Amino acid sequence: EVQLVESGGGLVQPGESLRLSCVASGFTFSRYWMSWVRQAPGKRLEWVANIKQDGSEKGYVDSVRGRLTISRDNAQNSLFLQMNSLRAEDTAIYYCAREDGSYIEYWGQGILVTVSS
Amino acid sequence: EIVLTQSPGTLSLSPGERATLSCRASQTVTSNFLAWYQQKPGQAPRLLIYDASSRATGIPDRFSGSGSGTDFTLTISRLDSEDFAVYYCQQYPGWTFGQGTKIEIK
Image (cartoon, rainbow over all chains, first blue to last red; front, side, top):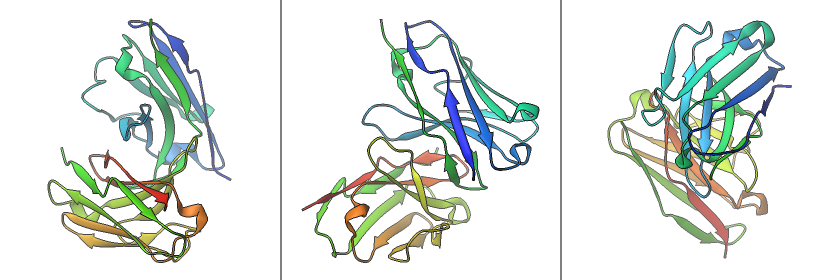
């Protein structure tokens, strides 16, 4: 059974940092592109970033480029999102997701990040 | 960036009725790489349809997708009580999502 389990969320003040982690199981992690997708309260889903199987290519939505960094550790079946210079508009549930070509079949349960003073 | 616009915003229907949801893209969607997801409160999205018309594993056949180019449709032939939720479309390769259509009980 495919499982994606996020951790590391919480409440931080504007300008602070946070690191999200996602541990994958039930599939060969190193064979898949992986993504982070977020959803602000009452808003649509928003793709945040993705990373190629070997980590050699990364993509970001414009609003986070330069502040958020995606990475992975295939030996530990883990995906990460380093979040720096956080803003109120980064408040959302963050989902770890496995890309299956042009769609996402597997999602984590989500982790809440709240940026507020 | 391709913008996806879903309509209507809310659909009020009764169990057993047919639901028709629209997703319109601002530009042609590459190779009809258009997916549909269902999301219930407090849950992660669930993949229903990919590549515009292919049903995901385990999805009942009352769900069907159609369309091409810039206009896509998700149809639920007969609404079951478990189908009342929010539905999102998504296109690739830009990974943009529509704003969602909520199906509520009439």
